[in-house]
Image 1 (tube, one colour):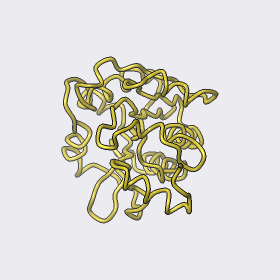
Image 2 (image 1 turned 60 degrees about the vertical axis):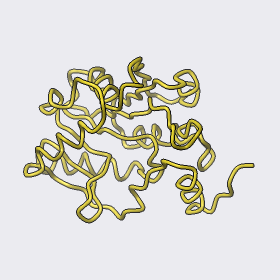
Image 3 (image 1 turned 90 degrees about the vertical axis):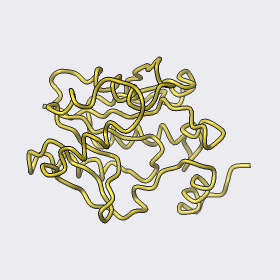
Image 4 (image 1 turned 180 degrees about the horizontal axis):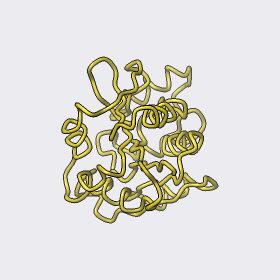
Length: 200
């Protein structure tokens, strides 16, 4: 049985002032980098939930073996994107790794580690963490999909993770590996870590 990827990429990135997921990073848009990591981790299928500037997002994914999943309700919060993505997971997938497209240092090896922990432990969820702090990406077994679905707003993934913490397995990483990009300074700092100059 396979493990799917649900890559959440429908938001409007209002804090950055532009569509951060289309911002160039290491020679490609952040969104494409995240999708490639899921593909390189051999997740199948890789489902990319799009909403804000969906056509541009799909253009950024051109040539990759992933499927865009439209979320017309994306303005109502990230929970609607989680709902749309999980609804598209095929019935033969035993679990899904939920990823955010604004975490440029989450690579294929990290994603594969979540799947390996799932196979080793049979835990209903495998969360990434640094120290005591939990962060995406998180693997959820199919049994948890009903709890993750439905409604608007944000934070359902966190709620379900907290609810099942006693049964969870974990993959531990340095904080830098789980850094996300929310504002322009975050993007500049991430580029600096790679020794990249800011685009002019």
